[in-house]
Length: 188
Image 1 (cartoon, rainbow, N blue to C red):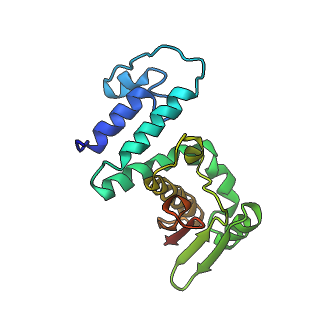
Image 2 (cartoon, one colour; image 1 turned 120 degrees about the vertical axis):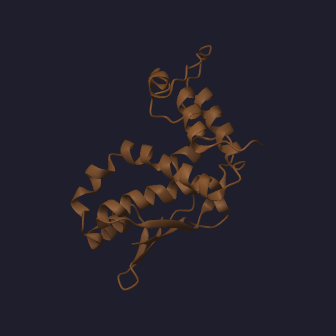
Image 3 (cartoon, rainbow, N blue to C red; image 1 turned 180 degrees about the horizontal axis):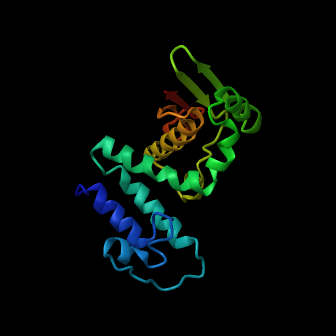
């Protein structure tokens, strides 16, 4: 498989509307990137084409040889989910109050969280027996494990906002990788 640059990948994803931000679907791709959108014949199931497109895209993501480039690309996709959930507003009461946020994650989301302030490390276990990723749930086949990089980006965005400083998140275990639970390590 030909190695594609991140810039070209994003350009093509936007032109087809795959980034889900709407720019490509609404014709803004030409204004942003100088790429014309190709209209396709209407289908009775409006969800079928985007679901199939996303399935093919994620199926091919493993063909990107540079693991860090793949990680960077998918981590960047987390912003769409973070913004869609309006997490900045939701998390505002927990800004600079990680203890209250941990309490919220445990009581509201059912997570199990341990926070070691001495090592500035948080282990966050989603405590679910299934993948909660909304993208993975919509795919007609099993999602690739690389999709977990998006979850890393989501965790980084959440905890960076709450802690008020940049964090690094990594997946310790994940259901898509064959583990029983999804667990993240957050270091700040």
